[in-house]
Length: 86
Image 1 (cartoon, helix red, strand yellow):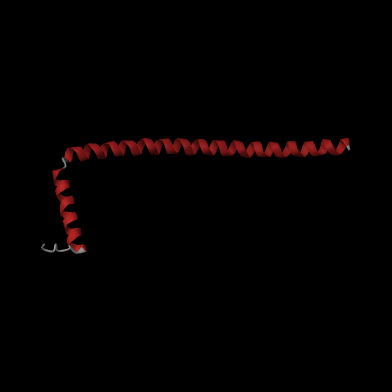
Image 2: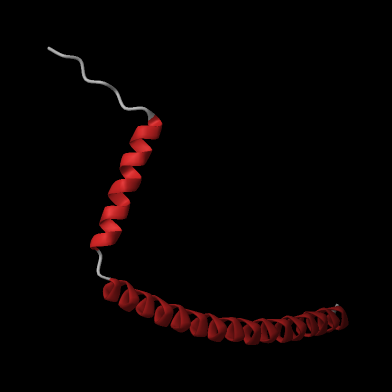
């Protein structure tokens, strides 16, 4: 049985690159443009949604700060009332 020659890494990479180029050559450019358009649209939608969520996060963070301040005042008032009772 004849021995098969083992390809070097360079040869394997070259073959993979050639296969990739051939695959790209076979792909219709219009499909790529359509896909790119879809990706751009999705990116814009996600970016818009991110801005909305970021804005909502800021609003909620401000409300949390207000509520934490009110809680501190209420805790202080409770302490004052407890000390009056004792």
